Image 1 (cartoon, rainbow, N blue to C red):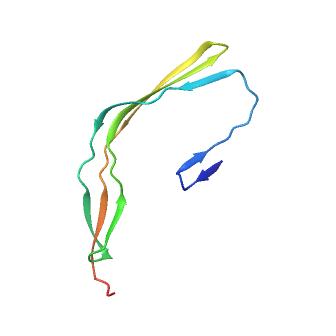
Image 2 (cartoon, rainbow, N blue to C red; image 1 turned 180 degrees about the horizontal axis):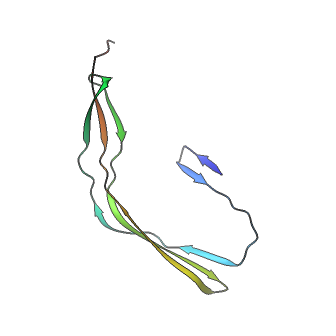
Image 3 (cartoon, one colour; image 1 turned 60 degrees about the vertical axis):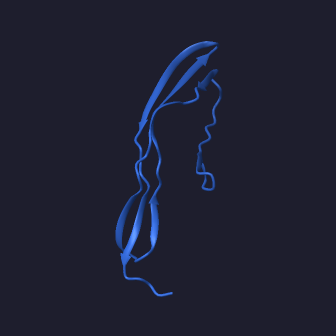
Length: 103
């Protein structure tokens, strides 16, 4: 297993002999996109007044469907349809209300 933090990718490598299966995965079908709401601002007395920190990022919600097909010797062995509903998420900012720091 390797993790590449610069691109946010985790890679697993499995080693085995082939049993002849071929797997295909469809492109995702994205439907019912729900826009994210407005930014959420939260007062934080542990941050100095005037300082702002983003602690979460906005993302739209959507319904996503992906189909996986497993074949062996040209015959479909199994088909799976995976449906996932992603909820929209607002960006969250912490707004400092604590004592101001001198510069």
